[in-house]
Image (cartoon, rainbow over all chains, first blue to last red; front, side, top):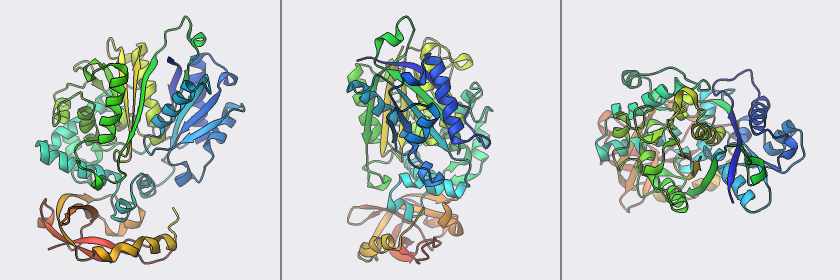
Length: 382
Length: 100
């Protein structure tokens, strides 16, 4: 069965103090419905990706809450897989269509984080880790910093080469009017920024953000007749241990390798066939490791290739994070996995404006939860 | 977040069997922007240690000096006060690592 994207839209990401979660959700959902030319009554079910509404906002039952905003009476589900909640919601939505239960569904990713202080958000995000990690006083930047230490030691990679990931993504962010940060940064600025968890500095880290993104998918051929639409041709999920220290390697994420191999196998595609990818760059080290695990770069050369411009718009091949990624576009955790789909949909339709990857035909999204305890990979084709 | 005293009690049952175990630092980082209940201790190092029986553990490094922050440094498991008490007001002790 073909899974077509009928509409896909994201709100601006950033510190949106004057916008409530309900309004954010409504804006994204309405915009996706308009793009699809559909009425809420034509949606069979709602899937919501969100991580923190219970922990930070004391709000559960998000499915029902957000269906209220659609003004219809349909089944609704909230999916949680830490920072991969959005991708996970989409995966389950696709499965529901493939199972024949629903025909057309709306998937919403949403997170409201900036209402709370940094320490509260840092503590809340550690819910994605293990008890041992929490009791050690580790934070998410800390856990990824341990991976960065391992990676730099093993492959003789310099901090400046990791900083190049942030520089690239900030450059891409300057071309995205919805990005949280639309200004460039230099290697020197990244190197001089405040230390967060050695060797990671402030500008190696994605920000705390608010935002929502919505996608409408359908298995109904009638709804796409006569229109150009992007298809989701693979949706794969894999998992790994919750704790980083329980893994065999600290320089690669086995969940990402497993999910992407399944996605390549099912589509018959190779890494070199991918034109554009949205990568889960919660930290600079994450993108360096991701482009290796996805097969875009040789092991140990992810950061070095990025520093050479091999993943930069108008310069490289297999462009990563044209949206600015989590680093510059922002990282409202539950929304990220869906925003990645919105970006790749635009790229494959050729409507990405200033940041268009020329001739993009096949795109990939890489959405990760925890320190790699869950990974969701989607492949899209024009 | 609600930390139940019962949960803390259940969690500490196996703690004593690790006290005195020795191992080597595999990886370290320095936490400078901690979560709420660790603010008073920052900055502090967190390390992944390979215990001599082969298993890996994560924990805070205490009584450290700059020269201890390196791969291969010998450390020992010790019992220390964990963090600032939350609403449950139970003073919680857990495993940390001390350089040898």
